[in-house]
Amino acid sequence: MTDYQNIQLETDSRGIATLWLNRPEKNNAFNSATISELIKALDVVAADPAVRLLVLRGRGKHFCAGGDLSWMQEAATLDFNGNLADARNLAELLYNLYQLKKPTLAVVQGAAFGGAVGLVSCCDMAIGADNAVFSLSEVRIGLMPATISPFVVKAMGERAARRYSMTAERFSGSRAAELGLLSQAFPAEELEAQTETWISNLLLNSPQAMIACKALYNEVAAGELTPNLRRSTESAIARIRVSPEGQEGLHAFLEKRTPSWQEQN
Image (tube, rainbow, N blue to C red; front, side, top):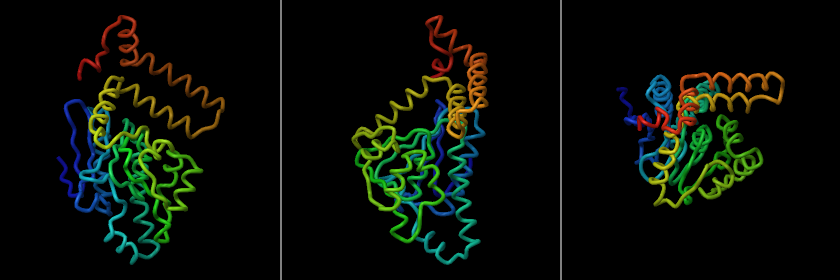
């Protein structure tokens, strides 16, 4: 097993991989080492055929307080090329998380500041405490949420992204749910139970169908309504109908029995 200093990766018997930001004494603020470890962990998850779902979480009171102060102090001493390399490392993490073939769920409590909003935006789904606090605070220190911006716009819409990036306002988990950044927000004391409810529901679904569904929406979201996109969606449903899990799911439904992937839980 890979040794990590700033994160933890746990995979249970159900195929749930939980990737923990694990610097609670620093409110899980990330630095270059954390980013590199997250990239490596995502590679491990991507290569493990037993993993059905990735859950992204933070240890302690906060999901992630954004960039670590010492990391930001170091960045202040770098020249353009040094900062460009730093930005490329963060961008690689964001793109790898967004493009991970397996379903992803973020679970947010406490603070989610700066780049943490980007991590949440890169996940397929996100839930959180209604009293969680989000902020795109970069402009307060003369910066901007550059590498995370494509994902933030996808998650909460351009209008809201412009507002919260320019004002640096803090907004609650409840507001994040209204914007679509969170799929749902719950009272903080219910978050653990609701997380398990979400996981249990996702485990009812065909693993390969969820992977195919994610790939489909990545393609659809990137394209216009063209004849080629229409043909692609036609082929996608035809392929999955004749796939092993597609056949199993259809026959299980028609025969009024439990599909094989549910029997494994």
